Image (cartoon, rainbow, N blue to C red):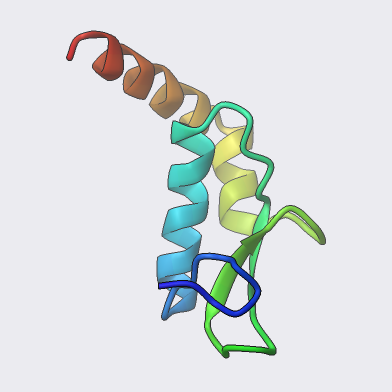
Length: 79
């Protein structure tokens, strides 16, 4: 389902944050850094503007995102 803005929506902040982290792992050029609650639909969206989500920041800093990215890429190669 999509919002009138055309963006994919998430029903909870937690679900949006999970999608944010997954997007950073799966899509090499993804620039999303945070989530926000939409004024139009009241649901949650990903955004590349504003301050970086603290959980994402921690995962980037400790190398978890990089490791998960590598694991995902290997998994895709082995399919």
